[in-house]
Image 1 (cartoon, rainbow, N blue to C red):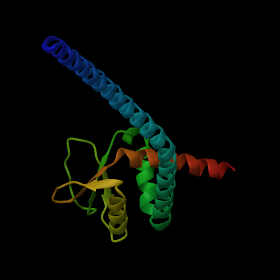
Image 2: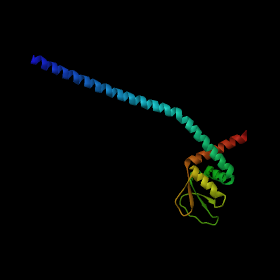
Image 3: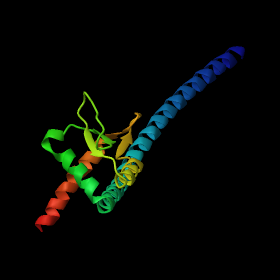
Image 4: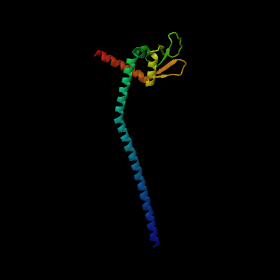
Length: 164
């Protein structure tokens, strides 16, 4: 009787061990399947949501650029002309200084004359993230690459509208 009871306990342990192994394997498969479904659904959701967000940002940036050109036409046209000129294609910094100021720089930079009309334009460009003020003892700015690309596309849309 003891023998059969011992065999019964051994079989019960083996059965319990097999069940726990099969349960842990099914848990692992379920976990990975859940992770895979989550990743795929998040990717599809982002793909669905992002085009709307991107188009909204493009419209906002276009509106901001139009407003800048309407509010500060002289400075914005001068900046656009300088940045799109062939000899200034790689220049991404500029100074705003007095007309009589003498500046020496080893790297090429644009230079604009300091005036009361240019300060609000610089402040608006900085708030919009198009330029970044560099720490210096004068008004020294770095131009963001995104802003240069927008100016290039703005130039094309103006030309296209002018031809119509």
